[in-house]
Image (cartoon, rainbow, N blue to C red; front, side):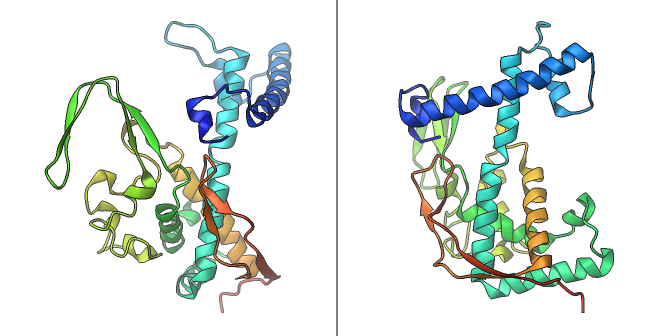
Length: 279
């Protein structure tokens, strides 16, 4: 998906042709699964079944094409963004010995309490790792622009007293990349500093609810935020417990040409298998 895809989603360009061909292949796979369930009269306890059984307010059931669209959205919504955020998190940790040592020590402490077990509650205890992920997301939110449609006329007054009228029906845009680096909210905003989210500082609350918008906000904030943190914690807790890692390529640049903004080029890491000890 390219930035131009937002404005002209059906432009006849190679990227869109590849996208449409890939979607059709996925549609064929999902259609086969949906059809086999219906023919067998089986009902499973999973997300696919929820989509198949779902209905609109007027009672109409979802079509196979709509179920396919929902499945594709669910499949990719947390894959691309999470892999990018995992990469940025690792790049920062391996470039900052202070925070790498802190997350390793946290893993040792948790392993001392729970052994090798990992579950939802144990992942929730990883506050240091959580702050490190959150800071990587502050500096590099995967989506650099968020759009909302105005449902009514309203006015906005800026910090310096300027007033803007927003008419009903207009599109309002905000940039997490810009908002997350505002110097009146974040001290030294271009510096990687996970401790800015620690108790006593909490810079992400300095200017209210929308001080931190890596996951959007309001009614249409990302519902996958808790899952994203759990997913990336699971990835990095496993890596930290089983490998010694060293970043051997330069710190990555930002690839601004992608719709979901990630790293430019390759991030090269030297690794050695090593079981983390609580001693």
